[in-house]
View 1 (tube, one colour):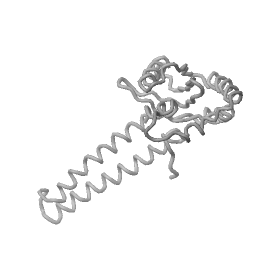
View 2 (cartoon, helix red, strand yellow; view 1 turned 30 degrees about the vertical axis):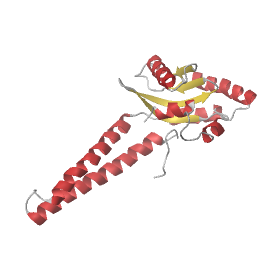
View 3 (cartoon, helix red, strand yellow; view 1 turned 60 degrees about the horizontal axis):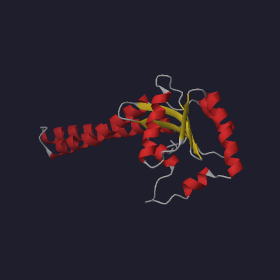
View 4 (cartoon, one colour; view 1 turned 180 degrees about the vertical axis):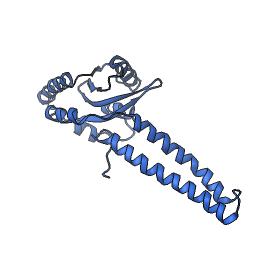
Length: 200
């Protein structure tokens, strides 16, 4: 199972598989400790049972994390293949689940360039305007209040916007990946990093 980092295509599927394996291992250890303690001591009142009970905490955390990723919807393969044709030198991130107090938003793809934030949401169960408002609020809290934020629910409209942003990137000679690589820990996060940090 090849590791995928947040923002890479396939990240949600990777986290699902990782969650299944991790939760299964934790649960197996908890059950093994409990039953070994029961077998050796003839009672559930032993140090192995206490250890098993303590290990229920990380097991529960892992299970909750797994459930969140099982409910997440990744970028479709067809959308990914289409986006690759239009992204050019833009830094496009995929499989982001943007979290808020009220709900989570399944964002298939996003890019940030020159005070423009452009996102694709294939999940028809959510309102794109709600996601736009949430992103605007989170960006403003991190010092990026003058950004234009547009969430598309159409792959064609999203790719058309990517083409426009790629022209801007080329004309202004902007290298989004170099901007991210040049970020120094302890300084203000870049706008693209803020967008990534508000997602699972």
